[in-house]
Length: 76
Picture: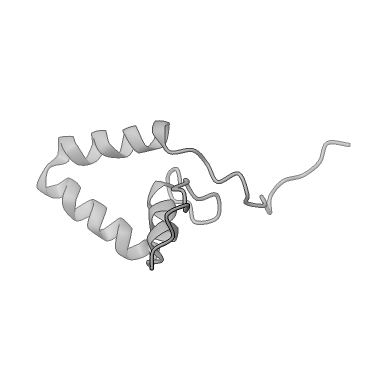
């Protein structure tokens, strides 16, 4: 079944703009390209709803805290 304790996070690895679609894809076990295409199609059908929903997700959905940032460089 679908685990109930799973949380939705913005992806730090699969990012094009802010990781919203990558996070949704990770949550549902889908390819992020499909999620992005569906979001674009939905936004084309109703631009205002698609853009507002994306911006809301950027502010509401937290970044994945358990992810290792491969570009992180320690200050020396």
